[in-house]
Image (cartoon, rainbow, N blue to C red; front, side, top):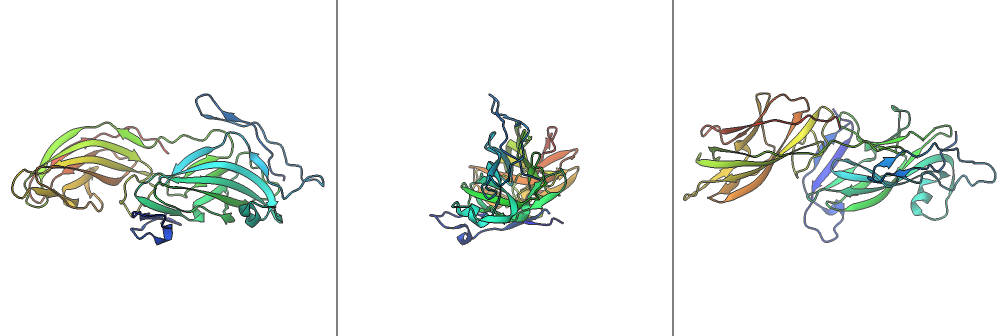
Length: 347
């Protein structure tokens, strides 16, 4: 069982409507000492981040104002990663003995007896179909490769479909804690976490993977059992859900030991008086010989015309064989397309 909830809602046409006003479908996924001074670093000609130089301690002597934010990282920004189809860009990283409320207000800093690391983020929802809300429990600041600091203030809250929002995360940090190798972890296991280091190179993700595949089979339709021609025109393997609805037990981010596979398909029904239909009973994926139905595939009728649709599944990352079965098996013999996946990276 996962330990936190991600909520995504189907976006409806809006005219400036707030996230809370949008009705739709909720998918639940459970996933479960001195601070550093400005670092040097940057990007290469290819755009890749280069590691900043070693950081020096901030001087909080009588001549310094401990409530004034000092940059943890001043170059190599922004740096980005993606989780649950939301792109997170780190635009600033500062440390101060300042209250989070005054940091968020942006005015004069209000001194605090506690020290905080403040991370400025822009969250961009790459989905055009769903709004998404990520609770604070999704984020941790990992400082020693294992121990994670929890969010003390701030938060991403909600991001509407196709929109971006600016926010910040505040983490209370001990005086002696070295943040030079700190990493913002987004997501908790068993979900595949996304990692955003505050310095050095951001690890590249191997996903999504677009597989160039074309195949055509004939299978019985769901309504009358008449022949329907199915064309497979594309396949995407991903860690983030790329379609509006699928797989509520997994949610919008695949676990470390699984991936989403999304097939782009076309179906052409018989050009007769009634045509036929495709739906959940006409699309199955055989995973090592065990059939799995497409989740919530709506029925669509075809009378000679071609219908474009997608079907998504969650499969083990170490799957050996896949076959896409197309056609209603209760009405006749479906067509089958063997699927060869490429070597899959960890993240």
